[in-house]
Length: 530
Image (cartoon, rainbow, N blue to C red; front, side, top):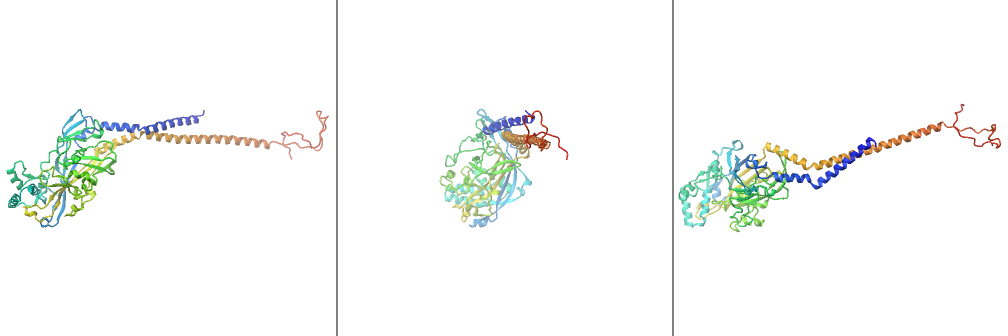
């Protein structure tokens, strides 16, 4: 066997093994299963887990951007006209949210934690100084008192209204951004506090929320089931709430939005429990995006999350009392927040009924600026970029006994909205890209084997063709040489002439006379000269 033949046979054997092994591994998905099993074990809230420290102290910076609606024509609104507002902001604060009092429960399958949040003003990301800039906005303590007195007698409401007039308290007030956000001593609440000490004499949208937490959480670590990773088991000791009007609406579903299980697919719904909204919401897949070179899935709340019960009957449980429902795009949360009739929505009433948008001049909802979304790396379930946007509104309507509300039309009045953003930092993004590269290479290793087998198959075909071509050339050369030899031999061959005279008879033919023209012989002779 020649060296060329040995090379062909060896290439064929290696090629066959590579193709058989590679295709078997692809069909069996051995390496993908191995990677997925590894991810399910590693991405858990256990002390040995690599993600545990990042969960306790999230590295990406979180920014809270506050936008306020400055009322430009309060007098017109009080006379029955349409209010006009102008958006002012952002006033940006860096948010710090470490996990504290972390305690493992039930053999490491659950974990207890508090999540206090603190805020630091970031002037370079803000439009002005919150301690200087003054806004005209709704006097929420005024509205809260009116709302509480609705069930009381007309005489009492009239007396309270006269008393408020004597203090110079109006439906609209002028305060600095800092006062509206972080609190001020309110004259009306101070009077009530003197009679009812349990009522706080200060008011602010974020009053007593700097350095405090939203409740006590117990999470699943994902040790028993990777799909439960980060899911809330209890909040303030409750597995479900009690203030909504249906069991489904009272359920505490999903995570707190900080983590999600690995191996996310595009078809699933992700659930988040938002303590500030007093409910769980779901997010659906929107599109594939790229953040700092990392491929991610974008999830966002679909339009049915805040849809009217007439269009989405599952939302009927958020009507309290039962049957008292608002329209599409708004949610009354005063059931879990005592005081003023507070309503939440997306900024500028994005995805809401047009009647809420048209009730106030100066609103311009759009998807780019007002949509809430979450970009998740699907393999690890890690949030790469998040943007949570929510608007705070208050219901203003006529209340008998308060003459200042005599002409106003019922309106869900916008107060402010917040844009809470977080994007993975550069160091974490670099580590994530490296991890995903390793996962991709290991997962696709069988394909590499198949690819090498295909390459060797091509090499085998080339070697086989060249070997066959070589054999044909050898046969052609042998034939040419044989033909050339035959031609040369033909040129050197002659025939003896037939004599017209009989030669001398030999002894052998003496007894048999020769005839003229008979065949004598054919034998090579030397060519006669002319």
